[in-house]
Image (cartoon, rainbow, N blue to C red; front, side, top):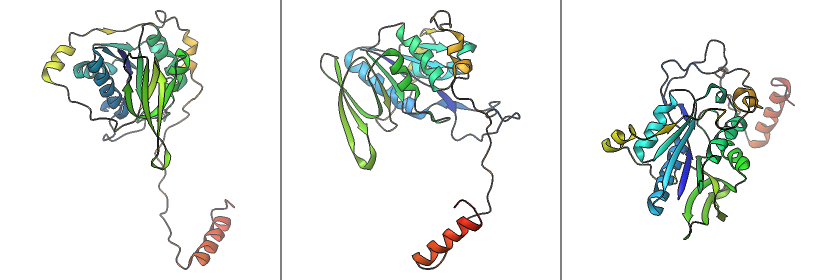
Length: 264
């Protein structure tokens, strides 16, 4: 079974963020980047599926030169090869533009399954996997907490996490796209042997033309969402605790919403 894993490199959640001078995005100078958390779980799940079936895992990522670090880690963990969409035309896209580019790269080969994380830790759209599935014309499941490939590899039994502590179990025909939730497994660590082998594993860098894409349909040019500005939340004056019984407190709250906040 051949599994593609779409990974995103995001700012380290432990890093101290600074907004760029023009307010367009965070300042990436000297900023540490890591693999998106739920994407790491997706990669681990793909590796386990491939190990059981004797298949292959291919890691795919879109982004600038620094993204190679994330792809190399994927190779060190056990992926067979990598695909890096580094053409500048791919950059700056929203979920629609990014999903279109990833789907074009995936569609150039024959995969049985595509795994992604449930959402990214930076912008958190949670829509890229859905867009990839739409362009490929494949079935899709989000918030996946369990994947069991049936004998023969034609279907997968998928467990989805739902509200109120409920789970939904689906039987989905393959090929398909599954967006994996963090916690589905325990990601492995790269061994020294794996790190050394990763240096010799192939990493393709297909261009826009090689994927047959129009530059107006990907990257910032193909995005429907524009980030106008980025800023830290303004500090408020603090919270106010309203004392008294519920009826009196409710009346005081309503008065404040009307006269002070002026939202009623």
